Amino acid sequence: MTAAGAFAPPEVAISVEGLSKKFGDRLVVDNLTMSVRRGQIYGFLGPNGSGKTTTIRMLCGLLTPDAGHGTCLGLDIRTQSREIRKHVGYMTQKFSLYTDLSVRENLEFVARLYGVPRPEDAAQQALVRLGLEGRGRQLAGELSGGWKQRLALGACILPAPQLLLLDEPTAGVDPQARREFWAQIHDLAAEGLTVLVSTHYMDEAERCHEIAYIAYGHLLARGTVAEVVAGSGLVTYVVDVARDGRDPGAVIAALSKALSGNPAVKMVAPFGISLHVSGHDADALEAAIAPFRAQEGLSWRRETATLEDVFIDLMMRSQDMLR
Ligand SMILES: Nc1ncnc2c1ncn2[C@@H]1O[C@H](COP(=O)(O)OP(=O)(O)O)[C@@H](O)[C@H]1O
Ligand SMILES: [Mg+2]
Image (cartoon, rainbow, N blue to C red; front, side, top):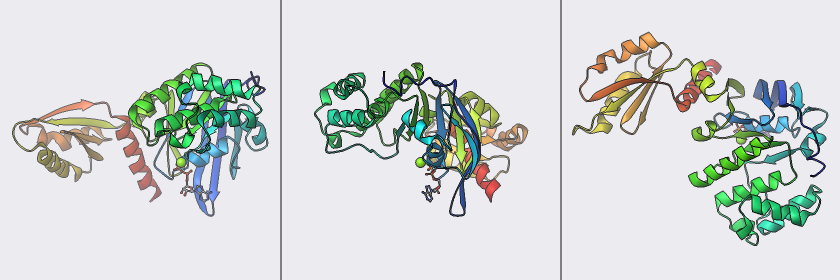
C-alpha cells in the first residue's frame, strides 16, 4: 500500500454547502450543496456549460469557490487542497497522458510522479488489472478511444486514490468499451473507492447509485434515478403508431404538431414509431390527448417518465425560470 492508500477515509467522501463560483460577472455555479457517501458512484448530469467541470474542480481544491465551504475526504476544500489532491484521481475531459510514450511508460511515469513504491511493479499490476498486458509497448497515442480511456483510468487509480473524479470519461467511446469501463468503475466502488462522474449518457446515469442534475449552475434534482423520476411529477403517455400502410413518420409528425400547441403538453418527443407526450397536470394532459385516443391506428399507454424526459423537462423549466 502507498502512503495515500494508508489514509483512512471518512464515511462521507464529499460534503459541501453553498458553493458558488463566478467567472467575471457570470455566476456559473450558484449555491450548490451536496454530499456523497464513501463507496458511492455519484453522477453529474446537465447541459454543456452548466458548471459540472467547475464544480468538480472546486471539490478537489483546484479552484477556490467565491462562497461556500465544505470537505472532501474529510479535508477542508479551501485550506487543505494540497492534501486532498494526494488522495484524488482526476480524469479530465481531455486525454492528458503522453501520446509518444508507450502504455507501460505512461503508467511507470505516473507511478514515479506520485512516489508509488516499486513503480515498475505498480505499472505491471495496473496493466494486468486493466487487461492492457498485451498493449504495454504500444504508444498511447495509437490506442483507440476505448483503450485510451482504460489507460487514463489505470493512471488515475495507480496512486491508490480514495476518490475518483471522472469528467465525461466516456465521451466518444463505443458502447462495448463504455460497458467495460463501467464494470471497472463498479468494481472500484465495491472496494470502497468513491466515484464522481459527469456524463451525458442516460444509460450511464442509470448505472450511478445517485445522480445530481445541474443546469446553468443550479442543482435542480438529486437522488436515486427512481427518486429523481418520481420527484419530477412528470406524467408521460407513450403512443405507438400501427404499421397499417400509412407513413408512420407522417402520422407522428401530425400528432406531434397537434399536441404541442396544447398548454397541458409540456413535451412531445418521437422515438421511432412512438411518441412520448408529457406534462405536469395529469387531468389536463388526459384532456389534451382525449381527442386523439379514438384515432384509428394509435395505441396509448401511460408510462413512467424516462430519465431523459425528466432531464429535458428540468432543463426547459430552468430556462423559463431564468428568463
Ligand atoms: N476558467 C474559466 N474562465 C472563464 N469562464 C469559464 C472558465 N471555466 C469555465 N467557464 C465558463 O463557465 C461555465 C461553466 O463551465 P463548465 O464548468 O465547464 O460547464 P460544464 O462542465 O457543465 O460543461 C461555462 O459557461 C464556461 O464557459
Ligand atoms: Mg465539463
